[in-house]
Image (cartoon, rainbow, N blue to C red; front, side, top):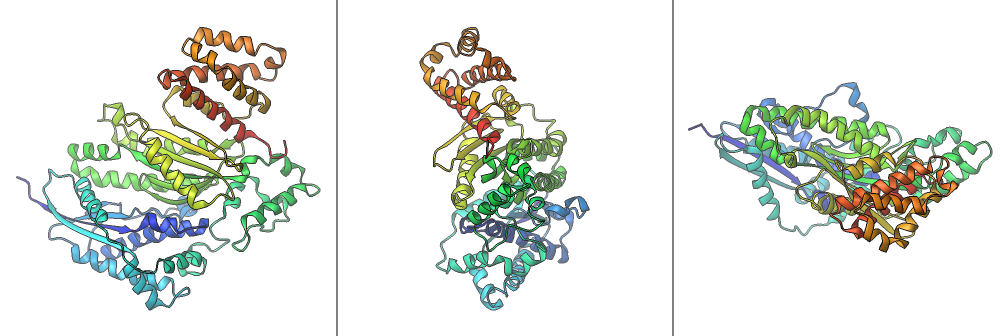
Length: 514
């Protein structure tokens, strides 16, 4: 029988409750980054206390300091948990590291509150749980220790303390040492600054900054409109789209990663550290891709992502960025670790919740929507078939639409190709007819030949054959047929899916002054 090894695990919170306190982008970043920074500092202190790199199960303890990652130094890239192994246990070492980190963190807020008050408050506010157990090699330490930590979190008690102090820390985070060290320039960008990233507005404004912490978002847009209407800025006016007034908040999470960990450990337990390192590398590359594309990562801890992003970026859109992230996941995880998984339903993938809202929409509600879309729709609509994007677009008018899109489906592959420019009048006509002709479509949607006849009959005029319209109509025909198959002959769901897809295409391409 194999000799047992001691494992010590730490988790920190309350993350969700802290995120809910944020009202501005920089506050949301701070509410997340504080916990990532905390784990990073605990790791540094443990390594100074003799814990070796090879002793860390999760996360991988070091970050690549290469210059290619300079752009994401402000992203939280450490998860809220760590697990280390040892022969004699490391409970005291972890506890000492936690205590020292709380004091160090409190010192970072001395410009907001006096240091002693901050430390005392953080000791009560932060919920840290340390668990130590002796496991034999037959027990997977990641699976087992995570269960122990989850049980601890479920038993957490409400502590009657002044949560307003943490809220004041978030509201004044730009005055803290942590913020000033990371943001040496203009700070974490606001929603309008992110949503209009591709416009490079400074080029049209005498290279002056129009966004600042003191300006209300609505004031920023008034100024953008004034700049666009100024003489000589006709190019900017043509480039402005309705989507520039909207922001995407995206939350992503890996599918079947737990299954993969089980497979890796059963094959070779020594590969767990290699896998941990790969997850770390994925988070860094993902955060870098988000930043380069124009988005702002809030956190990227392993397979867990949260970020702001423009809805449109030049000729690309938010779904282009998701595709880029999937390519990174495929290169870093699938190609290296999934050869032994034959069951396609257990293949790791990434699912996304995409909340698209008007720039004045409450950020907290948009954040909650992104989480709901991810965990209650993308990952639960079809438990055997994840790898999905659940999106919801909340219009300024209050109306909304959305859908769950499975990325490996024929429907999504075709819709993704159609997200480029399209005739807005034609799309409006198609959307209208889907509703008006619903009774006919109920009878024919499952029959491709009859469906072809329907589209030929309704869209056979000369105007429908000009400027690529005919090709677009054929694709809509195919979309409806594919949706009907995907929704298992449920015509209502199929029409709603196509309807949402067409409205999405129209929204992405609609010019503000068109």
